[in-house]
Length: 559
Image: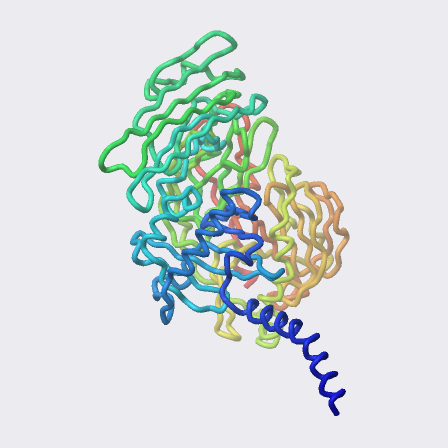
């Protein structure tokens, strides 16, 4: 028995230290972080900047010690104030015992209102003196709007950071912190400038700006920015070395002051300009906007007042860019629109006059209810829209069309564009977004202009359908076909066979061809294109266009 007791004592003596160590480890895993156990501290600020402190330097050790001290002096409270829930915060990750513990720190303008939430989701109120000290450190810059060093934007396109800066901003305790530094410009970087040198500063507007412009060793201009004109740098294909010196004055009202120097090479070209192909169209038609000297096609900004609910897409046409802009028949009528177009520091305004479409009586469809309820339900329309979404949103950047457009069949119009169609059998009505023709069985449907076939298929609403892309977002649609003569990828010429007319899909209870012309999915009136083509000018600004032609007559006998 005595031997057994001795053996038990020996076993306990061997395992107790291990058990104590395990218990200490488990307790340490769950306890708040301690300075002696922290291997590394990683802090992410409000702007996403990451700072790593790993005890490899005196500064790192001091920052770890400061954060642990800030934690230890804090007092536990019930919860984070409501106004801070979901707010931006500093995230500190403590690496201890090979495990990461995430703490979140919230600082406000008031040092008495600073908090942190630990890894156990417990909330603490930070000592105000500790909060003030942290907010006076360089690592807290993201808490202060005034700390953001001003960037320079050149001609609304290129953003430059200063080469040299002496910047001071007011921090938590009301004292100013300096973020001065000296760097080197990228001597190989060239920044495009269209016509005139447009300078703008982010965050803080300077009180004083001078510009020095040099071509080689020759000083072209050295004075206040406000005195700089287009004539000082010319308009075509020149390179200049430019220095911009900006100053922000110290005053009792400012939370920042300093001086910054920017250096860059400007590649100057002629200023951008735009013009419309015509200044008057009819509601439901479209206009072409042309631009030249566009350095970046993606930099063009377009606005319309009132809104046309459409963002133009520009395409390169030699040295020019063009966009087709529809004024949809679905928009509430407005007699005029003001278009504002900007690019490369140039802004132009255009007034587009819009005439109202002539009011015409409703057209009555004899389509039987059984056909309507099968082919023109909301479900059928939605299925059609979803199936053709990719076709609508994908455009050829090559312009295929040329000259005037033909009609898809050599027949009279049955239902014209923009006419209100009333279906007698179901008492429903809709506005016709295309043109329907009186046709005979066996008639050919032909391409209205050169283009690429981008869709061939059949939908409940449209029946057998072909879509031809003419380029720049312009597409023609041929519906109700009985057979199709082309395949996707074919290039068809104007007048080339598309298929044979038929009675598939929603028709007027008989053989039919429904034809639409769209720009990025917006239906537009095709009539003017049959006589004058598309008024697109790539050269000198066009002369005053002629009045729009009248739309072709419709036959009423076919109803």
